[in-house]
Length: 416
Image 1: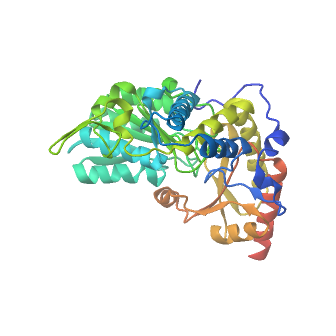
Image 2: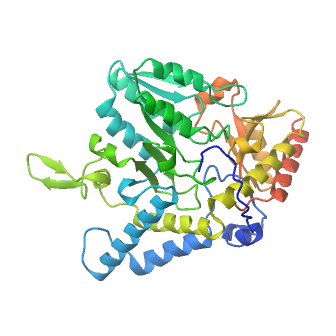
Image 3: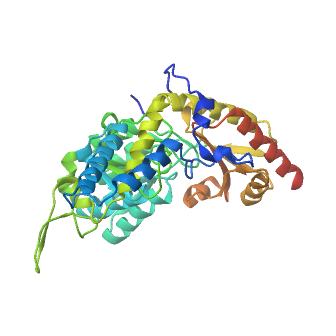
């Protein structure tokens, strides 16, 4: 499995059957939801799994021996195994967090604080979401390390020769990169970035928030040291994130949060920590949310798996790129072809502010996101104040893309 190749699997998504599983599509307004990159809608399988567990089997985990506690333990531990397997990880390498933002902060505050110091360098890219930029910026400010940026070209791709130049200096401790850009849609060559970084003895943190919902991901095949992703973009609940950490690195990481359930022994003067992933899960975890995310992973498998999803979303993205190209004055940022990008399109409209565009679209029940998408430095690097983003999912249809284009033409007429 590769991180950049388009799926060639013959699997075909039954989009009508998929759409029948989303309650929001039963609303009378005829909502066109093109904002899955911000947060995905939830299928009934996920909602039902959370409702059943919360109503019939709920208890706190790893604390009791009564019937409900035992059932909750089994459900939570089983959910972790399912979540880990979905991205090619193992339960012993999978830390449950509240978000991918927390996952990245965990790595920065734990591994980063223990391994990055004055004179060292951290490399990130211009396309990073603030969640994979600010933690490293602040780490470097605290430690005296230097933060370096990989630049993007005119099509939103990285120059790996520049990475080689940074690595050649021998000071880079970590490279942090988005698997898929949440603005450009760029699908970065993560496996190659990992290979080059490891050859220079640098670790790699991958932000997989946009990638996991859109394509098959195998963290073991990628070789990533740290891989973070989130539940709510994969048709699962909010309040849960996931961090894969290579097992051999866990011992290098002091605790990020302290409290209950992550300790070995506590007395009035000192504390010793639990081993492995347990030391990073202080307090009551997102139990119901873990069950919901595991159900989301199973649901994706039930509709054909990630290969079927990416094949469908590439067709939708290609159609969207073609239709958007018909509109005068509209410029799509990022790679020009669907095979080289994730399932989203961000665009600037000459003479129109993205917030005005989004408002007109909202009047026609077309849901998009407008602004800088938590990527202010990227927009500054592109020389664009803000963009409008339409992002797609397993339930997106070409009719919905047509509705988007019709609404954009209306916005153009109104503000002409």
